Amino acid sequence: MDLVEKVKSAGVVGAGGAGFPTHVKLAAQAEYFIVNAAECEPLIETDKYLCRAYAERIVSATEAVALHLGASRAVIALKAKYEDEIGALKAAAAKAGEAIEICAMPSFYPAGDEQTMVQFVTGRSVPERGLPLNVGAVVDNVGTMLGIADALEDLPVTDKFLSVTGEVKAPVMLRVPIGTSVVDCIANAELTTDGYAVVVGGPMMGKLLADDGEIEAAVVGKTTGNILVLSKEHYLVKRGAVPFERIRHQSRSACIQCRMCTDMCPRYLIGHEIRPHLVMRNLWRENSIASDEEYIRCFGDALNCCDCGVCEMFACPMGLSPRRVNVYFKQRLREKGLDKERNMAPRARPSLKYRRVPTERLIARLGMLKYYGAHVHGAHIEFVPAKVYIPFSQHIGRPALSKVKEGDAVTRGSLIAEAQGAVSANVHASVSGTVEKSDARGALIRVAGGGDGE
Ligand code: SF4
Ligand code: SF4
Image 1: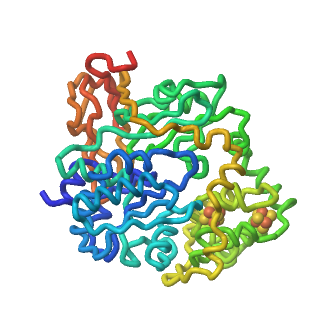
Image 2: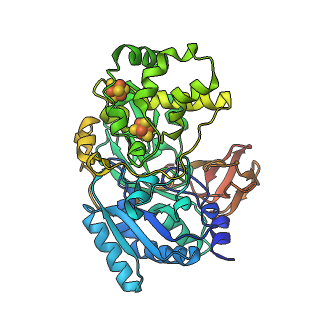
Image 3: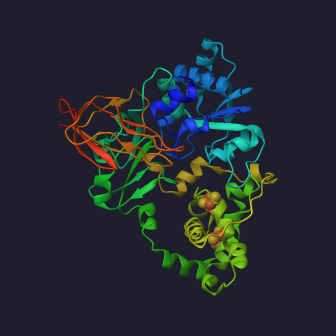
């Protein structure tokens, strides 16, 4: 099997949050291969941990992928302040004799946004709604590289590293089987609050779960890199509960058209046509717009939004929500079957380097300074629960097709759902045990021997 086949067989998907099947991305030739180790979301520790603990595996996989892509430049990009991680990666590259460049980035959000990173490393702006490959680059997250390193040894994706932080006594780095419940992960870090909400991912782009039932049902998937526990009284939780109609009214009454949301938008800064202040200006008259052309002119910019949240969590002095308004219009444009012409050759705006959001100031703005720096560097904890629920759709594309039924005995690493079609990914048993329930959406497996959670 060649590299792409091995990666496909192992079920590797983008570990940084997107979940795009990696074998599809790697079926290409590119000038640059960039490993994204910037970990730009505040409070997440996972990518840094992987760089320190598995530098040699990351370097060897980087070299293998760069060779496969025919890339003349293999770059690992991370923040200059990650000195230990840079030291570990440089030492691993020197030991292996590999010509891998380390690109040290300033500490800003969203340094790890794929298009922001490509612009920083190559000086080229990715076309609107385009791919890094359009400008000769392929980008993979550092966690994905570890998955590729395993795949090259015929080991499928079964486990996930993730940090647990926030309202907990002891923030931890965990390694758990895919399908471990979020509640089990939090228990390992010792909860310090009663009623709580959870952000799966980082505070800017993660998925907020405020409902107890949702939290109970949530499990670790291939893209889960962090669990942030928050009090239900936290600003972020309360903000997430604001209904859209109230946002619509607020926009009409309180938007002062200062255009800070536009001037600080990372996609605007790399040259894309996105001006959230204009979307906000026109929101109130949405229902009076009759022609499709005018609808696109007023709201089509929303299609270029990457949901980074800079506009609403940092830029807007009035506490308004341009991101949620953009999410709304993306959906409306889809429903109406409307699209906006793409700028295929954007050019970064001259103000780009002066408008980056410093990570520390962002953390303060989010009201999360008390969690910052609480994570102590050390070894990870291995935890195996009594049961796992493994979804068959942990990736972009078609869900994998189940190959198991109730009562089946499975072993860790065995294929339990097979990729369907061009964009999909295999799913493997993350533990050895017995299938208790299975349907088209996933399988519940009881762990042989009871696990650590029994
Ligand atoms: S969320 Fe806001 S800042 Fe981010 S890309 Fe969208 S409009 Fe721009
Ligand atoms: S930053 Fe806020 S107040 Fe200013 S234009 Fe944007 S939405 Fe309106």
